[in-house]
Amino acid sequence: MTRRANTLLYIAALSFCILISACKDRSSSQMPAMETQKNSISQDSLQKGKEEKLSKEEKHFQELMNSVIHDDAATFAHLISYPIMRSYPMKWIEDSVEMMKFFPIMADDSLKNVLKRTSPSDWGQIGWRGYTFDNSEYFWDEGNQLSGINYKSKQELAIREALIKRDLSTIHPSLKAKVMAPFSCFHDIQNDAIYRVDILDALDYTDENAKYRMAVYLKDTDLTGKPDYLLYVDYHLEGSAGVRVYECSDHQGNSISFYLDFYEQTNNFEAEVKLGKKKAKHIIDRTYWLDYFDSHQVKKRK
Image 1: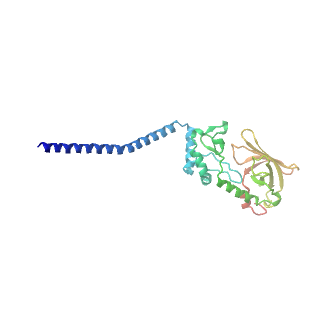
Image 2: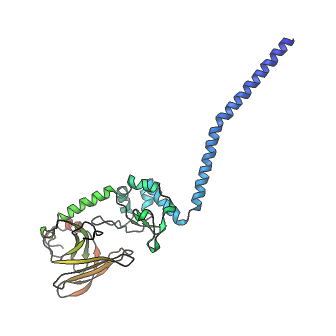
């Protein structure tokens, strides 16, 4: 009886040890999962806490950057103050529909990588100009809406280069220079004239060698021929707001002068025009040379 009792006691003790060991193994296997869940909750709480501490402007900057990083063109397009300027002969982006078309051109990997390592706190206010970051190389923002895109992707630069090449191929040979680029174009609502402005001796207005020339094509003038007037332009930025001033004239007393307010960025602005004997105030619009050339390849525009 004693030997049997001892055997039973041994079996019971062994079973108990096996049970305790199994419980420990199970508990140990659950620890990493529990720790992972706990860490995940902690990170979510931390992220939520950070977002709650962001100012209203910083939340906007974060949403703006996230929309680019995650290819959310619709959200990005509705965070904009239109129009958005592009370098001529690229067209300005006038509304959200046009922005959604432009978005894939702009939002390349280079821009996304910059925004991924940029935090809302990196944005700073530069006086009345608005908010920006990284020396304003990418965006300007009003604090609640994007107002300017300084960044130009490789694709946009290639598109612009192709447009410049095509644009310059349409003008009369007498107007061509070794170094030049189309700069801007305007339509005079009063007399249906086209005012084409080119940069000479440079490819960009920031070049200190840049000179400007305006070719004036009256209503019945062939756009492929010589212009009716050739005016030389004093173009400059005026004041801290960077108002773009055009003072155009020739030696015969013909002149056209107007200015564009960066913050208005509208059409239908006033110009003082003297072509011939009459001097009057005209209303002119921004336009694009290639649009007129493509639709008016005839000697008389109607």
